[in-house]
Amino acid sequence: MLTQFTALICAGGSPALQNRTVAAQATRLHYSAGTIAISALLAFPAHAQTYPAKPVRIITSGVGGAGDVASRIVAQGLAAVLGQQVIVDNRASGPLPVEVTLKSPADGYTLMLYGSTVWLGPYLRNNAPDPLKDFAPITLAATAPNILVVHPSLPVKNVKELIALATIHPGALNYATTGIGSSPHLAAELFQAMAHVQFVRISYKGAGAALTDLIGGQIQLTFATASSVSPHLKTGRLRALGVSSAHESVLLPGLTTIAAAGLPGYESSSLQGVFAPAGVPATILQKLSQELMRYLHSAEAKEKFLAVGAETVGSTPEQFAAAMKAEMTRMGKVIRDAGIRED
Figure 1 (cartoon, rainbow, N blue to C red):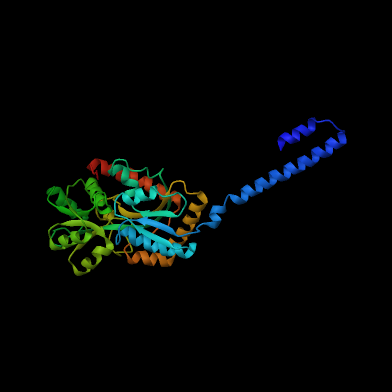
Figure 2 (figure 1 turned 30 degrees about the vertical axis):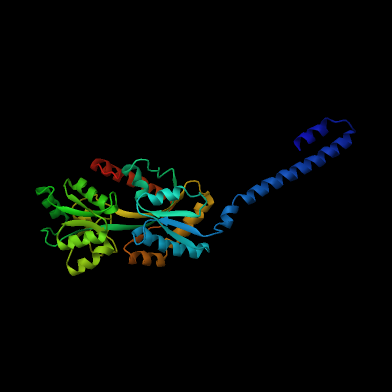
């Protein structure tokens, strides 16, 4: 249209006719440009207005694990506000949920709820994706502390006494853990690094088998979830020395932190966050973040998570990203120094 407009100005004819023609063309050009601009503004948030138009899936770890339980709670709450079915897609624990998520379209219909495997992966294995570039963090959903428990026959009543015993007898105490790089494993490694003591790691395929051997006296200590050890603390079959979080937990009221009990600065918890593949439109990420934060701050969500041994967080994407970076710096050093690898 601009070419036609210029040609008319240069053509012959009366000045009045030229002026009227130019004015008419200018009006049409202005109207068309305005229409295009308005259409663009209206179309920009269209995907957010129609999202979600189909079921959303949350990829997580195997059935029965912490990620699975958290995903089902989140799926129920998210489905209620989105008005669409939210499906939990269980995959084998480890890097598989991460790989499946990254291969999915970045359209907001595939999310992932997972823990430290996402952001600590580069320290544990080769060719792991970049957690800060390949994913879009949405919210830190929940956190669960580890409880340091020992067999009652071990002659220690608190963290200071455990450190003293381990210092006198390096390598004499065994601890149970499941999964290389898992939260309980790294909690124990951090404890050893900060206390300058040495335990012997005994690996188990499942937490149930590890607790059975701890109760039976085959091993001396472990870091475990509050929900798994709470019944055994009440019966006296296990003794709790401290909770790994920075503050005392409502999951085990009255149990002091490991930091306050003899290892200042110690903190280690299991984190579960919600991610999307990088590239999801910002308006969709914002909608998901707002709805998830609103639900995770609700009394219903808090009650459901407490029942399974976790506490809700409901952070902003920026807060979640900052938490990941802090974990990568702190725990990345522990992993490197201890030579922990999954490869």
